[in-house]
Every structure is written in structure tokens, then in C-alpha cells.
Image (cartoon, rainbow, N blue to C red; front, side, top):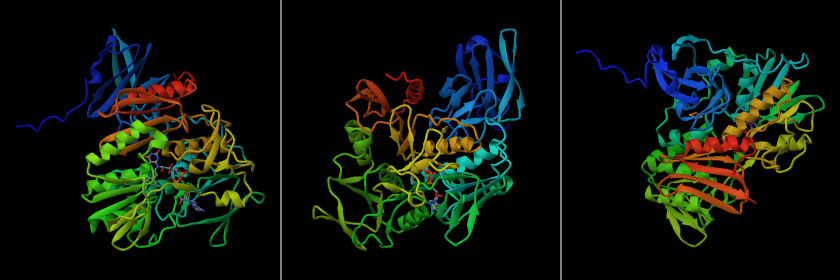
Length: 510
Ligand SMILES: Cc1cc2nc3c(=O)[nH]c(=O)nc-3n(C[C@H](O)[C@H](O)[C@H](O)COP(=O)(O)OP(=O)(O)OC[C@H]3O[C@@H](n4cnc5c(N)ncnc54)[C@H](O)[C@@H]3O)c2cc1C
Ligand code: FES
């Protein structure tokens, strides 16, 4: 008896597909040998590229074609249909590319072509010989990767006070913490990447000061590193509550891989956890600890979780979802003290707990920029090119407040994808591209098997239009102000979320 054939998606694209199978602008998932391939049509042009997103494997055939690119349905990465290049984060690696041939009313997928990303900028000006990046997180890593993708030949030094190389931070509160993602998924790249790409990654290296006149950074050990261009990407740090007991060893915050590992180690011996804060991270931690079998209590001052960002309807849904999974909420309450065995609530009660995770928000790490005299406005003020007031000094990610062309306001957000895209834009601009950063903000959050996607930015709204059924986890919420859609949240409505993004980009969202 022969082994069963592995399941391959769709038709064998080497045998040809009738042109009419595809809409004028359409896609079809098929295969070539063992590989899943996406065949895309744009009028009379046909493209064949790898069908799985290089971020988390999202099915590109369920995404959206926009000009000669395809956007991933899960977290809105964007790939060139012509070259396979990952044009927009969160995907960073390219997908494979195949040639196509049109013959007798059929399109055939032919040879696999080498992915050849096109440099988007001219070679860097001769004065740019050394680029220093402070921060080994989302923005810092994406910048370094983009610099080499653009064939930048000069020195890249990446300074990070973390002891781990750049990691997939969003995973630290989700699958990794839940025990569903192995350790090898967590680094954004293998260690060899940094030596192969000549990126001088210095871990456990704290930058103590920045001298914009001398174009140098001073390290905590007293040494100095000179730069021609500098990217500040220092991210944010968890807010620490001034509570009795906050320093106890079973009380944790979550930002780094080390933090996530420490929570996992503590969870192994714990029966009940208290999560202080019903933030995105707090509730993702709650879900992950439930997956590990712990009893979980969430203590938070608000009436509904996530109401400030997502509104009351979604807040109620998120609460119910967690309650259905056994989480116990103590809302409109706060912790007043922690001891080795319990958390005391302001309302007077106590909750026994041998693990406490505090997730009450983060504070951008601004001290370097502040003491260097850069303009600060609840973040580092940058222009549309992500450059600070100091020539040659750029800022990106959680610390950057930039002029958002979509909302017309200067905004600062704490989103993984925004940080990565800003890192990429800053890299191009450090090389002289003068490209405005004008991406529509996007974030996602995952609770059990429910993904929440959010595009745009709405700090306040006067209407939330709900389309679909929130309770059934199949909905789109549009946050409007003065009749204009500022943001769109969705659950299991990936196409709507992508279309909303495109509409916001063109200023036609309604
Ligand atoms: C657990 C968790 C889950 C998350 N999940 C999501 C999600 O699902 N979706 C989403 O959109 N966002 C999510 N986020 C937010 C997202 O991770 C951040 O917005 C993003 O990492 C910001 O990128 P950044 O480069 O600005 O900062 P970071 O990624 O924090 O990187 C900052 C880097 O700077 C270094 N650094 C800081 N100061 C110094 C110094 N003085 N010297 C040297 N190095 C320094 C730090 O060590 C770090 O390497 C999550 C965050 C956490 C913590
Ligand atoms: S899986 Fe494609 S962007 Fe995340």
C-alpha cells in the first residue's frame, strides 16, 4: 500500500487554469508540486507567488489585491505580486515567485524565480557611513533589516539593553505564554542573521546619553559610539504600581522574553493568578494562563474591559468571552496591597494568589531624548519623515509622536505593526528617501480563538455603527466622529478590515 498523498490546496497550476476562472481582479489558491501557490489576476496580467504569508502563514488568497500587491487577511502585511517582496510589515521575509504564461485562454504557472527585492532608494549619500539604532525591538529590528534590504553597505550598530535578540513581542502574551508556541518561534531571526548581514547587535548594552552635537551616544559602561544617522527606538516599559508588595518575587510585569519566561516558571507552581489591569496585555495574559489551567481573577478600575479603546459593546463581549473561559472579574475595583499569599482589594476583599501579573499600561522610554534636548510632547516629536528636530536623529515605534495625515492630529500609538513600519520608513529616510510615513495604524489582539483587528485611530467618537453579530464573533464596528469613520474594529471579518484600511488610505472611509 502506498503512503497517502499529502493534501495540496486547489488545482495543479502547472496544468493551466482557464482565464475566466479568475475575476478581472481575482485570486485562486492552487499548488505547484508540494508548494501552495497563489495565482492572481489583474486585468491581463497574471502573477504567481507563495500562498502563505511569511508572518504567521495567513492565507493570502483570502486577502485583498491592491494595485500590484496583495494584503494578508490576518495582520495586513503586504506583498508585491511582481517580486514577492514583503513591502509592509508585519511580514518581513519575501514569498517565492513563479513566472506565468498565457496560452490558448489558459494561464500556466512555470518556473520558480528568485525573489529579487528592488532597492527603493538610491545608494546612501557618502556621508552616511554608520547608522546606530538604539533599541532591539519592533522598530529597531525592522529598520536594520530594511537598511540591508536596500543594500546599505555601511556599518549598522544595534544597541539593546535586553539580553535577548529581537523577539516576536506580541507572542509573549499569546501562544508562547499559553504554551502553544515553541521557543524557536520567538526570535525574529536566527542568531546567524546578524553576522551574515553584518549587523553589530550588542545586547545587554544600555545607552545612557545622546550627544546630538557630537553625533555620539554614550553607553552605560562609559564608552561612546559615533553615528552619521541615529534611530531612537527605545519602546516603552510597563507602568509599575506603587503598591505594598509590588516587589515580591511572584509579582510580574510583561514586556520582554525574560518576563514571559518568568511568568511561565511561576505559573508551573501556581494554582491561582491575579491579573491587575484589564488592558489588552492583561487580558491576553489571563487567556494564556487559563490555557495553562490556572484559576484567573482580573482586577481593574474600569466598568468594562477595553471600553476606552473599543467601546461598550465590544467591552461587554470581551468580558463575556473571558467569563465563558472561567475568568473572574473584579471590575470597578483596584488592588491596595499584595502579600505572599493574597491580593487585597480596595473594596475590602482579598483574593488568594500565588502569581500576580500587573498589566496596567506602559510608559514610553523617553529619557534619552529628553535629556538630549529633543522636543517632547507625550512622546518624541517627529516630522512626517520620522526625523526629530536634531538633524540625522530619527525616532520610531512606541516613543514617536508623528503627524498622522489621516486623523490630522499628532499621534503616538503602541502597536507592533506601526512600530515595524515606522522602523522601515525611518530606514529609508536615513538613506535619503524623503518618504512620508502615512500608513493607517493597525493592531490586532487575540483572546482564545477570537482575533480582534483594528484599523485607524479613534481617541473619541460620537457613534459606533455595528454591522453583524458581536456575540457570535462576526462583526465590524465603525467608530465615527462628525460622520467620518476614524477607525474600524472587526472580528472574523478580514476582508472588511482590509477594505476599511484601503478606504482610509484614500480618505474615502464611510
Ligand atoms: C506582551 C506584549 C504583547 C503585545 N501584543 C501586541 C499585539 O498583539 N498587537 C500590537 O499591535 N502590539 C502588541 N504589543 C505592543 C508592541 O509589542 C509594541 O508596540 C512594539 O514592540 C513597540 O516597538 P518598539 O520598537 O517601539 O519598542 P520595543 O519593541 O519595546 O523595543 C524597544 C527596545 O529598546 C531597548 N531599549 C530601550 N531603552 C534603551 C536604552 N536606553 N539603551 C539600550 N536599549 C534600550 C529595549 O531593550 C528594546 O530592545 C504587545 C506588547 C507586549 C509587551
Ligand atoms: S499572518 Fe500575514 S500578516 Fe500576520
